[in-house]
Length: 328
Image 1 (cartoon, rainbow, N blue to C red):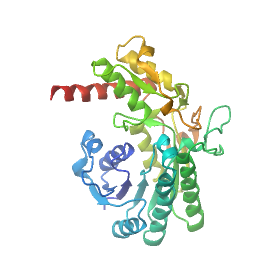
Image 2: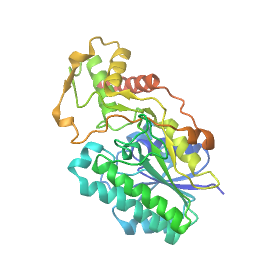
Image 3: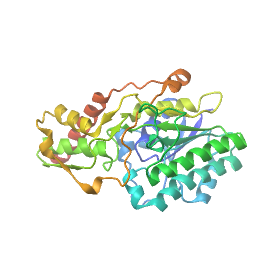
Image 4: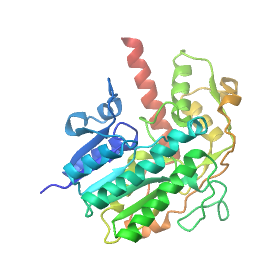
């Protein structure tokens, strides 16, 4: 019998890459979506897997819908990737962010505990939970949390409730503390896609500036397609454990900008960048860099795509998209 997996957040960035990986391993994949008049399947279409996924309705803010899904499917694995995941928006919508990112995880765990206790559960945690906490500017599984946004605070609750259900009820429940991971299907509101889309538009004469916030913030950026492999591996282990996943390299937003412009063959990138106070956060996380030695040792996981390759991949994809649109 083929294994079954339920992925929440199937229409986002990580969901499609994870679904593609699981389909290649002969899983039956269910993708949870909220009730939309016109769902956006662009990311699934991009990877060519839209018709291979069974879409089911559910909402992290609706406890009964999650109970019904788990009771009816009883999946072997649940990957909770759905969230209000834009840090900037969490300052404007802290209550909604908390309801989805914190209570939604509790609802899912309760559904699994009551109706499918053998289901293995993956919670998408985030490096933003570390905030200002580090040891010599590096974070690992033992680094204390110091969240600096409503998004990060909501994810800290989700992390600890996952640990609690593992320890209290014996569920196979794990946290993947993933550092920043990007791809050609990253949401346009995130700074990396905003940069590569803006560079592509400037290259094609469709724009003359990119408005950004803090250029000095440094992040550990990897490729989403690499990171979903770590998610899968976490649920294949004999015992449930939490893992930090990242590349071990930190690059500033300015480096990302410079790399994208240089790859596109555009000189003097500074004249195209406008600093906009609207994109400054009330409290900033200046530096995130992963120590993923535990994942390397236990999971056998290492990132494959380098920083420069990631930036180039995203610029190429945005150039191709925009060229296709201008032809129509």
